[in-house]
Image (cartoon, rainbow, N blue to C red):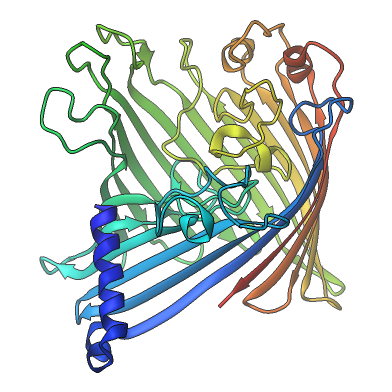
Length: 468
């Protein structure tokens, strides 16, 4: 689907530019917009928590996003987006050699596999049909889906990640709404396979289906419910197809706002059969039985000298008693904390917090909480400064043993804690500069994993974002 749409849209654009007489027809109401992000990171000890082992990070990298939209017909619209984020400072060829970004873009390379164009990806290529069957706004093709920071599912540009990742979803999306409720349905693939007909034609493919219902409420409250089903097609060499891995995530969330105070809550539950590739016959390893609870509190007080916004967050990512004793999302973008969230290994980040090829950031079997405050001085209305404290621990000792994939479980569930100082300067609606200083103090679980003394990790980062 993505290659067909990508090729079709690219040919349409080329034909339009080469035939100026028809440009106003083929590219009717053509608009461009985009974004440039620069991320500079200096950090130490984030991969091994051992100062004696040199793992200093000092780099700056750029992500460029360009979106083109136009009307094919009065009720059919096209969108194509290209992204390049393999431009690392000091890398002369800007492609192929960066260890930071090579796996952090999901899309179709424009040309080849190396160099600047080989690392420029078609990340969106879709058609949108207005009011199909008189009611459904229908989006067909490669597209972004969800909201940044979502605990359950998000496909799109990620900002709070080392390497500035981008991913997308190949899908049919259907939207319907009235004054009280909005409904979104999605059917697509997150991983495809070769188009062959036979017993194993779907081996390796992953399907995604879901429905999200949102109650619009009013200025004081809103909420919604959703169900997603992710199916992985499995098999083993020389054997007939085996039963699918079948993950369900059902949840509900809501937000209430009154007189400067905000309360948000979310509950998610796993269902389905977890099966492991390479196991034949396909006995069910265990059921997906994890759950997640997330609560957010906030308040904004507008004082004479400054606005002050304290906040608190609590997240419990738990599960049952089997191997899958953790919550399993569809494609999470939940990345709490300036260090833990930035480097944790559960979202294709190159560095893995804790090292030993173990992603201690794997979502699940964890209790995470944070508190902090942000303030904007009246005399410097473009500046927002903040301080935050985060704590991370496993829900159970069994999770420490299972999730570290070794014999390191010694009864300590504390992963660590961190303190972050942040600052943001909003030069305009389209230009912002952000900075952060932080330290992560490893806990007993990391000390047990590394089987020896551990030292804190430190971070200083700056990012610049320009929208156009």
